[in-house]
Image 1 (cartoon, rainbow, N blue to C red):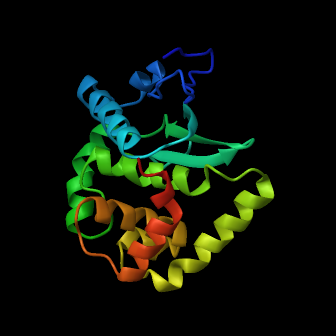
Image 2 (cartoon, rainbow, N blue to C red):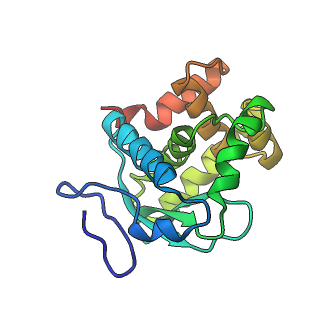
Length: 190
């Protein structure tokens, strides 16, 4: 992979997508954490056709680990430079055990974010992205109880991403969640 001045890694037919070198500047981003994140991304890329255009390290405020979004016609991911991965790694098991998050590993965190990418990666315009976003958001009322995080945000997007993680871990989710996850990302499975 080749990094540009802006630390982006592009996913096209010739290049492997990976985390940028400047990820090492984030608090708690040890070699072990970087290795786990890259391995998780590789695993997801082997399972699905993921069309993530870029990964950048930027400030995203408190609370967020990663931010995925549709930018100028392509899906991108921001790793929050303000995050503390030492704390995040310690909190993952506690947040899983409490039912707040479906994620019980860094791989699960990446799976959650890649679900968001796959849902929108075929949108060809801002209006198509916004229409699908609103459609998925409206599904929350059918998806309550998948995780405390999804219930706190009352977000269909978050509920389905959490359901995707639970399904990958062979955990039970409502049948409607299984059907919706398959509907939105099944076409990208390799």
